Image (cartoon, rainbow, N blue to C red; front, side):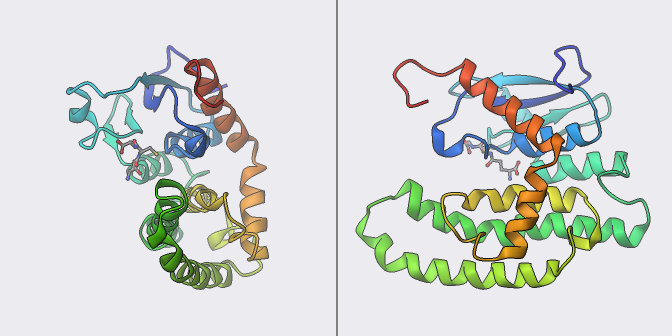
Length: 224
Ligand SMILES: N[C@@H](CCC(=O)N[C@@H](CS)C(=O)NCC(=O)O)C(=O)O
């Protein structure tokens, strides 16, 4: 079990988040990658307001931050690249497939995830507001078009570029952000890709560990 209080690698995570964020908080990406390669890590929990010194580790006060004996890092993408460069199970060593794996990670973060932010803003953070009714159909059209192209790029393969990598891991966590919709289900290849990703034992251990922390820190009176 990679969670180990005496491990050299440390990540930060929130002690508790509301329901809509449970299982989506970005430390999951790092936990999952570490599980894939069996590297033990300890978790430093952040409770409520971040102390001023935390901004030296993560300039925006966000999670995850990461440290090991070699580097101190922020940004889940950078952390995954760091881990990928350490272990071929997360990223091939040959230059061409290595860079293509990184390209998919960046595309998940830069060409796919930003499209989902607007929908989440509408459906979760501004739920019920009048302006969202007019905007939502346009946002859905744009997301559907992007997901269709993504499914086409995956084709009939199990994984982008034909093998599991940090690019696939990142794409799966990004697609999970649409779990409150049927948008991924509308693309059977992507739905199968996401299911395949979520069936990985490393993913399941990472998710269970994140959710267990929230359960342990459930504030009295807050929704479970
Ligand atoms: N680009 C950053 C984003 C990190 C991020 O948005 N973290 C969220 C949790 S998933 C957070 O800490 N939110 C609280 C905040 O922004 O104050 C990364 O990928 O690491």
